Length: 418
Length: 161
Image (cartoon, rainbow over all chains, first blue to last red; front, side, top):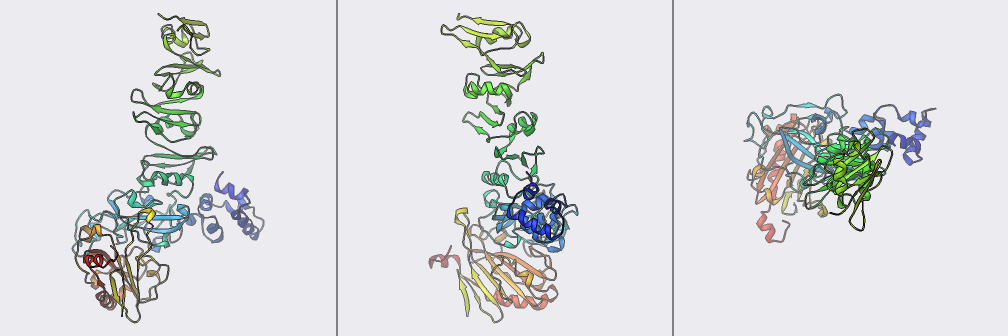
């Protein structure tokens, strides 16, 4: 449910406030009152009270106060860095300050990290103080695009906060600002010496993620310093009415009300996206990747798993095959890790998957069964699912005398101990 | 009369509001705070940034704001903090874009330096760039009245590190 949906359906204080104000304007529904721009939902998610009480555009609500070039503040890096909340090429982290009670950090501290230009073409001016002449800077003065409400100054302000990368004695001015809810000395080369300026607490940009379960998980993982790295844009809806996600340089975090916010990255993410992502057969991640001492790992999803081990390749297991495999113990059971992704039967009547300890096959719409041991060898030799025996109709059983017996559509394979 | 705390002191001058403070560190986050000295020809608002946020915006053309902000001992004498001694201010160092937030009419200068084994940033804002020739000498006079106790003496007397 979107923020707009919530506020138009719920009897929350925000919704009651909107109702009162809508009535004041005449016969306008709560939703009609609110849905005037495409970004109202985001504005309400960020600052419902501020948006409704203060006459301003929703976009301005997202960007917060002082969002023009004339305001004198520096632009957010994501605005001028293709959405990435990190220092652009040619700049470096030069200092930081913190602002208290920021709604963008769920009421906590918000950290602003200046990315300063480097002196690229010359070093004149460095003898006088810590700033080279403007003509030497790696960027030139401008402002955020008119396509965004963050039209603050880009590469204009000749200033340095001074707690980061202090080995750089001389630099250009502030190119842009990175933000985080985790102190920068935990993820960049910055000193743990805070400077304060609460005036900037609510300043932001449409390309930054806001408070929510995804941000909380990102922060728990270490935010910019985690393997996820910098965000590539704001929180977005998946489009299925269920999930939301934020993309990062090193992965993603997906959230639903059922699964919570879960990070996914690396080979697990690649395999998941290859199989269709959240709208594919696996659904949303329910946990994060678990790695074992032997470097094998798995990540579970609503309807399956992605896993890998040193002796196999990254594979997806889902559907009826997954249910059978999981019932037999999954990676710890007799089947062990999958050797590759599942495949459709050559006759198109079912689906199967190869594991280290056997195979699992299922006809379409029917349960899956495991084929293992010497029965598997015989079944494969006889043409597998399109051969003499067809698909399995029961798991291979090992009898008390060691005999292995597998039941198939067209008969039973019995292999006695040699 | 002197305003003196944390090994920093400044002459209390008529028409100047001078404060020396040290914010409470969030030790749970591993932060370390250091002393900050503010001097201004206007009354300093209770809510203000360490580098003048909330003050610079309300300066009148004849006003001056000065911040002396200490940094950690690990940066003393190196790189950005390599310059030794309290800098001598000059009108030529001031510019209207030398602020973290550019405010029309204002002018500022910023210096990082080491003095007495302690690392500092001196940030001076003038209410009017056009009046810098008159205002900078006032700032020079005030900064000249600053005294910084050296780190060794401060530690020996049980002062803050």
